[in-house]
Image (cartoon, rainbow, N blue to C red; front, side, top):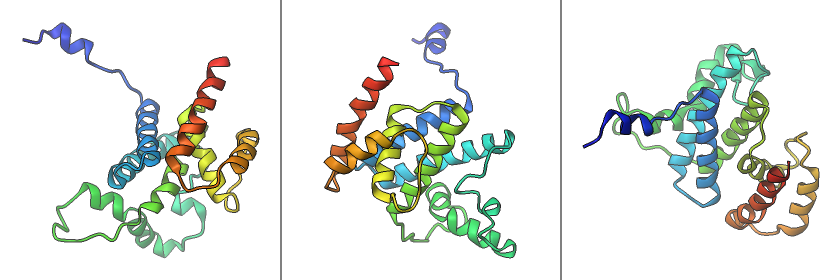
Length: 187
């Protein structure tokens, strides 16, 4: 029989940044280990919601997912854009309005949600956890022509480009995570 003391030992005190960090890191682990894409997307978008709320409260810079702040979407079409942007996220969480609907889901889209979450977490927390560094490096290697990151990772980007020539995400993760962990333990 559990006692009150046992229940208290199992409790975890969490703030919103810690919650988002855990969600992001778990999503990244699923991503690199070819885990379930629905779970990866759900964890990623849950973290994005938390980070978006924190970012708004702190009056932070716009996120990639801030459709209104981007100025790219016409104001009269923001509702349509939000619905499209959150279609998979809502499909994975709700069934009250569309219990028979089938979703044509592209798991590759999660990569862009995940980089948004990683970058905003790093900005808000002023921390750069090894798992997130690996993902940011992977993203840069994959999408260098799209986005420039100014997080001091140019050295690892050069190494990744010279060594990495396959689409084996797991091998990439297994190669670079220990490097970032070792670097962090020296600091």
